[in-house]
Length: 459
Image (tube, rainbow, N blue to C red):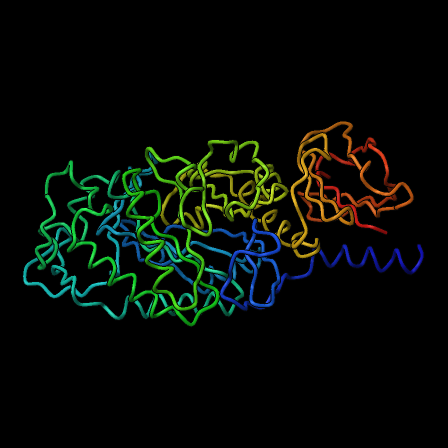
């Protein structure tokens, strides 16, 4: 082996086994060079991927023996998997239950802390003092800022979820456990107490409620203004009637956030459409499975930064094929992780989940080795339909199936040679390396069943 090839293989080794570190410098903005992704202040294009979990911000008080959430350990877990992005969950209700997830291990949890002081007089639905929605609970915002700061130190971007709409729809008696519900606060908002009117909290129908929501969002913006690892998400899986309300808050943040952190809108459940997301003023979106995002992700065209989230595709689920297919389609990926099963217990295959987590980290490493400014999904260059290419200099192919496959290099110079290396998604390592000449469409053969990724680099 000559010195050049030895150095090349060393580089491949480092690609797989070295820790991915990139200094956060931002805040992020949609990349001017490649709007499928964000870029930092140095114009470095950033691919986002990571595992998020339900109780990574608010406490869940358990009816059984489970430890409290350890945020520093969670950050180490993310770093160990080379992840760089999470959703920092909030919960609007005083309680939450896994029955709303149609989960067989039913549990009811008490949630806290909240953004407003609990002064009373009188007790709310959870037996604690009622809220004064005009007085902020500073400890809530202290925790928020502290966790964002801790994540920043680990090089992790944080999407701060501002509201949560799923629970109000699907948690048993959820509306009556919302802080805005008449009997849970001392502020007399005038919201209709009829259960059929529960979702108007997330519509532009009550000026008092909207005023309190704006004050809360403004407070979050003030506390997090200086952090360049922050993104915002308006609401998790709110109902389809929340569209105008969510658009309103996207614009509100853009008008009031001095440093213009990215603002996202995620899929509305039930009744939402991906078209609503693409038509929104949001910088980034998370679609549902319509259009193929679950099984056969379409090539991203840069209309929005897409963050494909298993939360909106499976709920709890996802696989390695989805990770690589999405990545090679110009899509960022994040995973709804039953981390330590502290919320949802189930018959999860931890080994399968771990392979998904690891491959998300592998895609991030590949993203740092390809010229992401110029990388575009080019499905026509592969028999599988999954290829990310950068100006004929670098190619990444994914072949989920066994057998012979073709790659189309007819658009490249026939005299050009590429170093071709097969990557094993189970071992997380490169195997066979060979030379491939450009200028034609040609057949390639996977050396092993798990060698599903082919990297071509101009020699």
